[in-house]
Length: 235
Image (cartoon, rainbow, N blue to C red; front, side, top):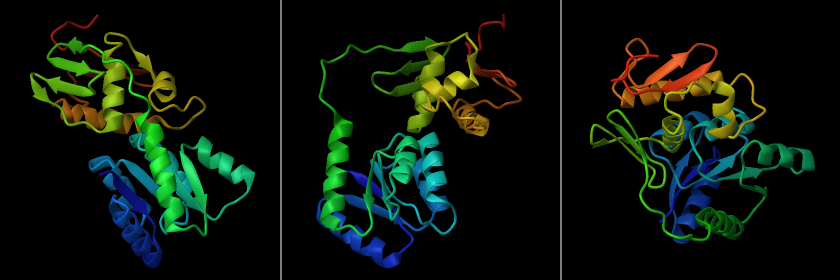
């Protein structure tokens, strides 16, 4: 059953919607603020997020942008905003769908099912196992798996996307702009360097290294990131 993260600060609305979606066969995890939502997304990725824009600790549009930096989970925005301009901003920021308040539980459930169906897509032909090996690191983009010295790595969706992108370009410095465009799908973003730095830091911990003692990940200040074989001498 899909795990749905419900981000809604109104206790009555959250309770009613949680019960309705649970009755419809979903597993619902309700939270009441942006901070809790981002922590859950980073540590226990949901299959779908329902995001209310009127949160007490942060503007919902900013939450949506931050969420997109750490997760590819589909997002349905619940909003009282009805203007075309507002809706376009939400979709451009990464929302997959939206419902305008007031809405019924049946309408939300139908939206969820539609978004999840789109995410599944049409099955294609089976692809043979493939992967990239750099030193003791093996990354398989098809299977979305990674292992270090034979031990599986537990990565979030965005951590894996970043690692796979760098592994497929091992030995080359990948610019921050390229990472934002290709990994985060944000070609026009500026001032997002912190997003990259945070994910590189998380990856370093899981690869057993640090910024002061790098092994696989080499950063070039103001330029980008390169994944290397630690056994190979620097060029």
